[in-house]
Length: 426
Image (cartoon, rainbow, N blue to C red; front, side, top):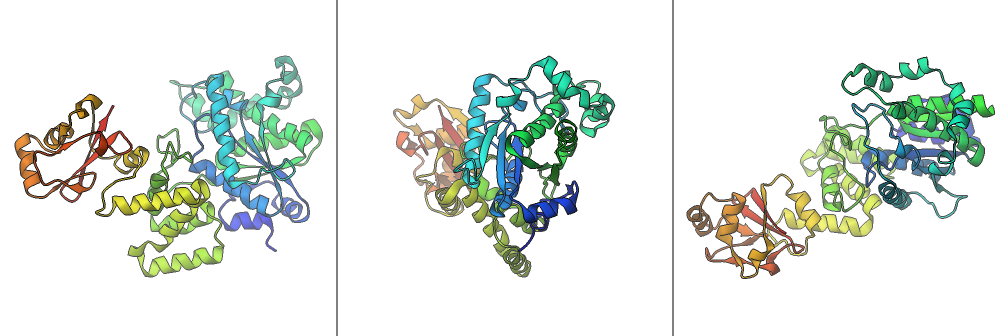
C-alpha cells in the first residue's frame, strides 16, 4: 500500500515537508489528525482552496482524520502573505455568513459525518477568549521580531512605502502558529498542510508547539497552482474560479477546466480529481494522439464539476454547453449561466417597463450596439443573420416581451456567426 505522503507527492501536493522520513513513518503507522485552514475573507472558497480540500480528502481516504479549520478568528485579522495591500476588515455578520459557506463547501468533499471521522472547527472559539496580556506573555515571548520581519511576505510589505504593514496583519503569524499549538493539545493534531505561501506560518506553529508543549508536529506545503499560460486563479487578482454556483456557475466552472492548456491537463487531473494515476496517464496519451478532441480536458471538466457541484451541476453544465454551442434555442438557461457564457459580450441594461407592450428587436439591436441604426438592423435581419436567444428572427417588425426573457431578466442577440450582445432588463 502506498504511503500517504508518497501518494500526495505523486499527485503534486508536496513541495516541502518538515522531517519527511519521520512523517512518512508516522502516516504509515498511526491514524493522524491533521488540519488545513481557510479564512472567511470571501463569500466562497475558490479552486486554489480546492487544492487543499482535495489533499485533505486523500489523507482522509488513507485513514487519517481531517480538521477543516474555518478561520473565524484569523479572518478578523487577515493574512498578509504575498499581498500588496491590507485586507479590508469584515463585519461580524459577513464573517458568519462566509463561515457557513466555507463549512458547506468543505462538507461536499470531505466526510464530516462525525467528529471522530472529520470535523469543521472555528478558531474564534479559542482565539476570541485570549486576553492580550496573557497572549503576549504565553505566546509572544517565543517569537523573535527579527525573524518575523525577515519573512519574505512581511519584508515585501515593509519595502513598500506606500502600503507598509499594520501591526494587526503583522501579528497574524502568531495567531496561526497558536492555532497549531492549540490543536495539538485540544485535538491531538500532528500535521498542518497548506500552500507554499504558508510555509513560514506553518513552521512558526511547529516551533511554537515545541516550545509551549514539547510536541513534535509536522508541515506539508504544495506549490501555488498556476496555469502554464500564466492565467492565475486568485481572488485578490480578480481571477478566482469560485466553488459557489451563484458566483461561478457550473457551466463556467466546467468551461474553465475544459479549456485548460494541454501542458496542464495531466497535472490538474491529479490535483482536482480522484482518478487513479494510471488512468490519468492513459488520458494524457490519448490526448496527445488526438489533441483536437480534448479527451483529457473533457474528463477533467466532468470529474471536477461532479466533485464540486454534484451530478445535477454536471448535468446542468453539459446541457448548457450543448445549447450554447449548438443551434437550439436558449430556453431553460438560468441568468447566471447566460451572464457567465457571454461575459465578454457587449451588454446594456434596459428598463423592464419597456417590455409591457413589447420592445422591437430593432430597438434592442440599436441599444446593445448590435446595429448602428434601425436601417442597418433591418438589413441584418433580411439577410438572415440575426437570432434572439438563438432563435432566428425573420420579421423586422418582431418584438420581444416578458416571455422572451431568459430567467426573467436577459435577452441574447446573435448577429452573424459569433457576434453576441446582451440586453439585461431591470
